[in-house]
Image 1 (tube, rainbow, N blue to C red):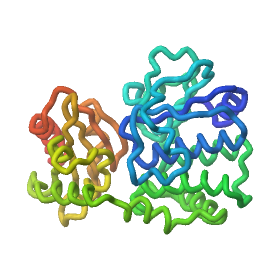
Image 2: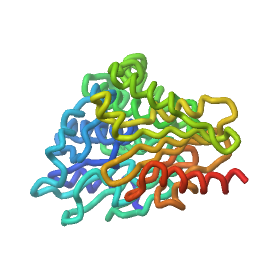
Image 3: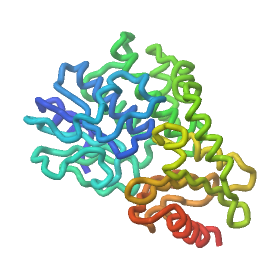
Image 4: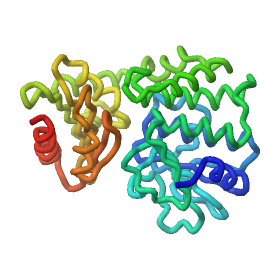
Length: 325
């Protein structure tokens, strides 16, 4: 594996840099990518975002989020390097990179990372990929001891990543490093109240109705230790809403007393996509990996092409039941 110093040298010597993340990007993916994007621009580098996905509405307060407009889905001509953040394997990258001849830099914190880049840096002890990006930006010469508008915007992206990937600093992945970085970002003026309000108190009426509809049809299974939420495409069509990031919906399943694992399965064009969250001892990463997915001990995901919601449900429950025995 490479060092952040080596990756810093590659980026500083590159003329044109693309940045991307995993499909259906969450707060850490978006925050890390935009922090790096804005940081490179601050250093006067020619950097841009590559994204098949439109960034979810609750993350569009972050600077440069509008670059994810669905128009740039592969590297532009003369791009030297593409940085992929928060993505464990090549197939889940939100960009078309199969024909890219330049270098790929892979920066991540998932234990199941496939090391698909020419340059790879994976820190499984980082609570969020943003912790790695913070260190990388420091190495590249961005001093977070100063207070200015540019650093405030970069810091807002990083803090957003920390908040979303740690469940508001309540998950077991939080370390002293997480709090030290958050403290440093607060010192340069990052407004945690504004970030929380933008993330969690800024839903459309249609999104609240989607949440309500989803929870209303939640099931408790396997001796009430598993909560299951299914979201068919018809929900989005009925409410006239794009079903994007559903991390806020799956969290309701873990709030139920006695539930050990929360599962959310949503219907896609090609089949189903599932998210898994655990509360205590169950390692949902193991469950996801057995079904072709990956992630963390407490949070994982699976793309299940060719399977409808019921078929995906049966396969996931079969694996969870084995872990609960």
